[in-house]
Length: 419
Image 1: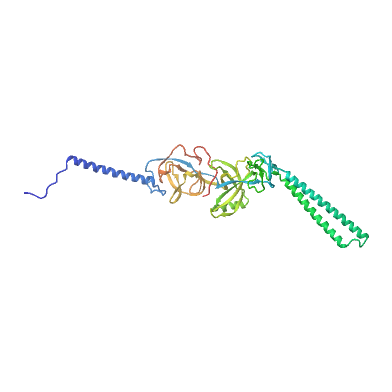
Image 2: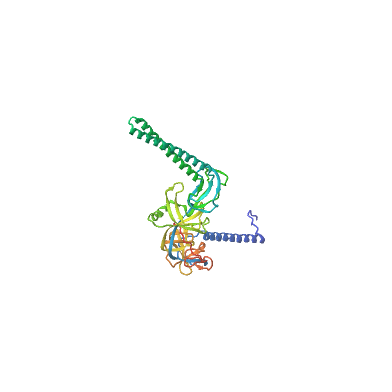
């Protein structure tokens, strides 16, 4: 008896083995993908929220570096970009025109106000003085003759009443007045000629250091030359003009107006070394609306002439010093969705997440206003794999800190930036 249903032929042994191997490979691939996803979520999505009870203590022990929370004084510093400006700068210009015959200074030397720097040919001005003096002598002689004539007229009128008319006497007195005015004018012209002669000796207008020579002897100098013949700059003392954001102005104004001396430190372009220390000298009377900043001027003694006009510096203004505050290394501060926090040692081998309230800080230290107390320990390195309740071991090496000081022995930099 026949049937329309036919049985399928069983698979061959080779085909059965191939299917079994494919199923096993699929299981391993799925398991590997799930493991990678779990590791990525644990590695790249840390949470600053406390883990549920019982979660701590699981997982491998993580090597970290620790630092102790300390207490001490902390200076609050405002930083700004600044430019060195000379206390006084004067362009030495000739006040009379003529050929420059002599230069008496050495480029770069220190000069005093009144020192002779150069000389213009004085001969034309000497002749002008002689001419003015001759004209003065002539007009003085005319004045003297007119005065003698008036004396004769008055004497004659006294002896003979009708010999000289009153009009003639009045005319003579008027003539004497004209001669006297002419003599005064001549004296002024003599003074002007002598003054111009004195201008042929070009003198330093202020104390300072003179720059490079701008005009050589033999050239004709003019009073309207814009560049002059040299520039004298006063380098001691010297000032720095720097800017601060307007939001920091009020805290500076309160202390400056009270008469408190605010110190300013000038650092080099790379901010790697301090150049000089001075005091805040003046605050501008308006805020720059385009940048939202205000200009301040600090004065420096600059006895060693470390600062030079137009030099770019980083200025740091010490506004106040916080006394006996809680300090931690800046590397210990972490930030999450709920705000700043640190990993605080909970016992010898576990850490816990501790939210904190930050005060001022700088690149090395931060002030903790709430959340920590001196003597506690926090993690400063190895925080990327930590969780609340994670087991840790304090590793020895670079970055391990004690008492808030770096392991390499350097002292923290004495500066701060208000947050």
